[in-house]
Amino acid sequence: MKGWMEGNGPQSNIILSSRTRLARNINELPFPDTLDAERAGSVVKTVSDSLEGGVPDIGRFESHRLQDLGQLERQVLVERHLISPKLAKQNNGAAVISDDSIASVMVNEEDHIRIQVILPGLQIRKAWELASNMDDAMEQRMEYAYDERWGYLTCCPTNVGTGMRASVMIHLPALNITGNINKILQAVTQIGLTIRGLYGEGTDIIGNVFQISNQITLGRAEEEIVENLTGVTMQIIGKEKEARRILLENNRVQIEDRIWRSWGIMKNARIMQSQECLKLLSDIRLGVDLGILEDIPVSVLNEIMIDTQSASLQKRSGKELTAAERDIARAELIRSKL
Amino acid sequence: MQCDECGKKPATVHITKVENGKKTDIHLCDQCAMQKNVLSLSTNFSINDLLAGILSSGAASPIKLDPIQDTKCAVCGLTYSRFKETGRFGCSGCYMVFGERLNPLFKRVHGNTAHTGKIPNKAGGRIKVMREIEKMKQELEQAIKNEEYEKAASLRDRIREMCKAEKGDVK
Image (cartoon, rainbow over all chains, first blue to last red; front, side, top):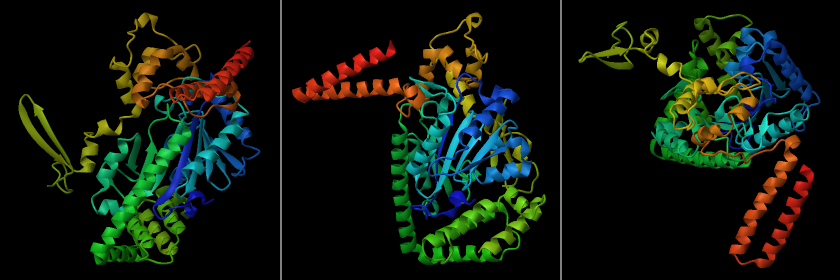
């Protein structure tokens, strides 16, 4: 059930995960926004049936109708990146999730079908291949909305063509500390990619985790999108490593001090707010990567990042918690993991 | 600087208002700014608003529509003028009904108007052949440029064969 959080992929000291999403629709059927409950239900059934036999290299799937899930359970799926906040609000929707949580299909989100595969580390190509296998299996059971000129037809014009959004979650603390992050942000957007902070809004990015994804879906083949994103990501990894080396060379004691202080707080705090947690977690992740902190598996850091979110904490405690109670539960959970 | 409203938290939102030639500066913290709704513009702004902006700017839609003759999708009932407001399609049928006039929008968003990626297996047979022919035509041109006439001749023959077979299939 851990999926990408295992953290055992290539480059997983800087790349948390790689994701590929494919948007697909059924021909001549209104898109989910205006689809009545009955036909929406039959889309859910068609999609679930099409994956019943499993998919090579992925295994079996289980279908969860949103209407059968409580608010908390929906939110937990959002926090684990298995469904989007939009799908969580859609009563006619469903989430079809693979046993290992690596692959999922959102049914009746913005499009009828959103296939997604998330793998640990830098594995964009593999994520695309697996998503494409799922796509092939599903296509046998339904007729997709497809046009020779424009490719896969989607609700939003920004997804038409391949319907593909490939992305990586990347941890860039050293580029941020050394004040180089803005240069990277600007350069990336000039070559048809977008980058945004995963947590925090606007320029106030928390936890140094960024998401880089392709912007263009029409006129570029999937392989090009994969190559382009992988290439750019490798470049950024190189820059981040260089920034880390320079930091250590010039400010070793300051960096060590920062990491050990963060470790001290994470290991001992009794009250932990979510933003503070993300900031400290970034320091600890850096400490592990630099070999300053030892014997902490990446999977534990990923679990802390995901499981300390609001809904996941409440699910774990088996009851609703106030913000103050969550801060206490968060601190407890972190201490138990480290 | 403290927030003008609550006087407790530091001000992070700074607004300069000019009304009747009189300038006033307001400094608020995040929370008070949210409550006063001064940030609502950025919170409710979606990609589709932006697309709608492109669509109705005129540049993307050279054909000015008479409202009475507005095109309507037979499958979902979405009209072109409604699409221009929302920036979202109602179903795959809309693409066919709105047709070529979508290309300027695609050009603006993606810089391209033609799909070059995956083809569904079901729809794919013919498209795959067409793409193969297209690719060979380019190779042929290149071969002629490079004066590789033997290669060019064999490519030409293969293209002919494939075009013939393709036409046979269509019948």
